[in-house]
Length: 344
Ligand code: TXA
Ligand code: MG
Image 1 (cartoon, rainbow, N blue to C red):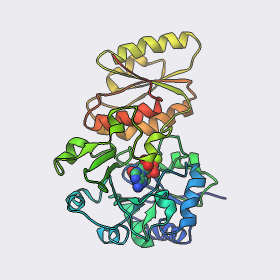
Image 2: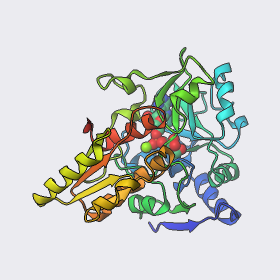
Image 3: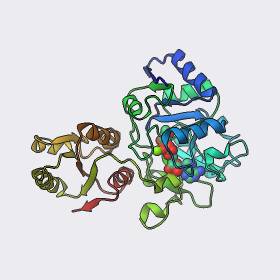
Image 4: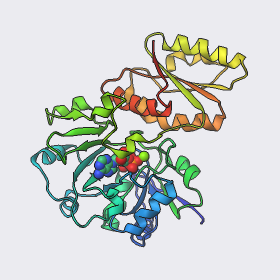
């Protein structure tokens, strides 16, 4: 299959391209499209066969349920059994990078929920995503548009790298503004629980729902996560990766990088602007200003993929403290590095 990539300017959206994407989705085809978090691999969320095709195309484990994307709150009511007062309070964050888990209605195909009785719903704020869903007039199932296990794509060329020849269309809306996936919060049980940290942090959500807690698996590595997707290998670059956190991290990375290189290992470093100069003769990418965690989350996945393109064997990366947005970033980095994190 030939994969077409069509560029859409979000300040001047070409409705012909939006219609083309929506028509393909309505016909049951898969389309990759931008959202404010990462690119999604979309299918009609009411078509079981199309949803099955998402799993096949991404090589996704079948027990990992999909998020349904909507373009207005009215679409929600058919898809869920009940909308609680807590959910209504969170609607203040919609549209935006927040996914809410509800008890599902009968309308939802079993493939979407992986056989479970809950469904994940997200109302993205990205104009292109909203236009496509609005035009298709159906909820769109969309996991991140990567082959399972790889870093989520935050631009069209990273989507193309993973999906070329597998889907008919990638809608190119430039770089995803946020760069890490939505926060997933489960409201299907008594206590609202964050299953995946994202742009909206525990601290921010507690201002709206003070009783919000983190899923035990986000606090204790020995607990099985409630969100199936959290238990799989994830966000992994081809290279092995080690993460260092703390005041001495950059010095440590410098020493390690030189030592590994002297053993003939191709080393790449992921560091901050203030350390770029001293790593002049290494493969290197900056996360930006070390005090700007939003910039870091925006750059993380693209940087991991860039490191692979540079062909490094080993990535040495500086991580950040595990609170606020840092918690969401470290959740991803920990998986990229297969748990290989050292606090110095
Ligand atoms: O930002 C995002 O959420 C992106 C964009 C495209 O919207 N999508 C995304 O989808 O990250 P995906 O499939 O890569 O991650 C969805 C996560 C997985 O960890 C999955 O296990 C969890 O949400 N999930 C989906 N439905 C669930 C459910 N009913 N109960 C618990 N977890 C669920
Ligand atoms: Mg994903």
